[in-house]
Length: 200
Image (cartoon, rainbow, N blue to C red; front, side, top):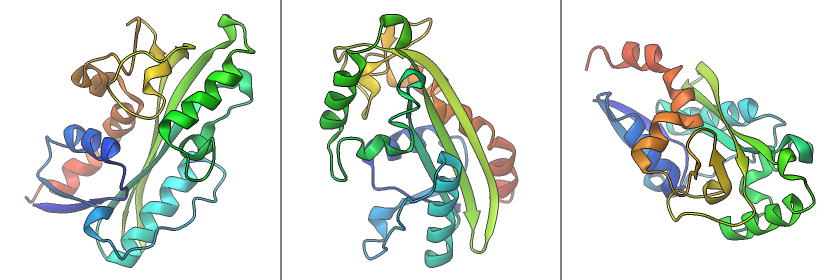
């Protein structure tokens, strides 16, 4: 099987990626399998650049095909925040709950019509010394002021998906996997993974 490193320690993200990549003959590793690896600082100014930085650094250092993503929530009425700072919105070591609390405080100053938002996910796939592809997927919706649902992670319980009238925290995982920003980004990588795995 093709060996692929998913360059994250986020268990929620790993679970989603494993389910989304399940149709390919891939043996998935995560950064938890490489405890001595030191991740680079996410100091780029776009999701795409951060994804490439993380994927290429891990691929070069660990000599393994690597997939990395940078994803987050974008609220246009708030100037695009939390954006690339979604994971550390309330501080460098903030919890998901602390990030959500900070966001809710800002959303209360907006009219309901201004609470549109979207999740963005940029995924880069790198071999050692080579960027193979980088893609981005978006998922649009709006934000609610009270958390709803216990599924998912991050801002999922505040993100109400258009046409479903449920937050990502309420949606069944299989439904979320069909419509999420990660799904849309990974769909753009299908031809690459088919090519990489065709001999397995």
